[in-house]
Length: 183
Image 1 (cartoon, rainbow, N blue to C red):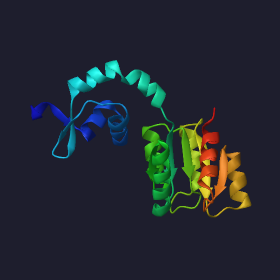
Image 2: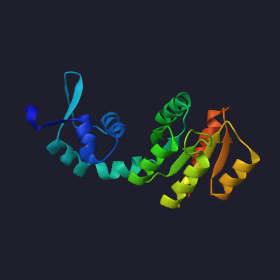
Image 3: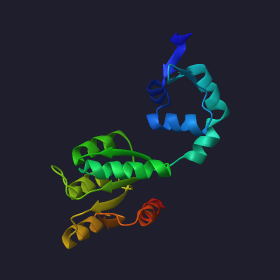
């Protein structure tokens, strides 16, 4: 019996979604699962049946924009991760421009939140390269080191908004994200 069961990471790969999406389906959408030894297990047949019966309408209703946070400050990224998790966003993180570009080559994102000053590739160069890969991606710059020249260059590259750190009001930040994501 245990031979036909798969783990949550295997299910995420099977469904081609992020692991956190599997857990969100477990919590919100009555995903058929078995709890064994404190871990979730799944039968592919049950998952396929569930997808046919439930997922299409729920997937449309739950579809969330995909956000990539690029910042070398781990503490700040963790703050943003907590912020995005509480609001139900689908997101990924990268600690530098090179890692962000690797992710951008693998998948499309609706919004990039980019720090300007990072070791290696800076935010402006990342924005240039991201726009060449995905011309329609929305970009929000979030930086502690604002300057007139960098702001002008970022806006010239098509940045949607330019916000200075530290974030004083999370609700204003949430509004900036919603505005950046509007078509």
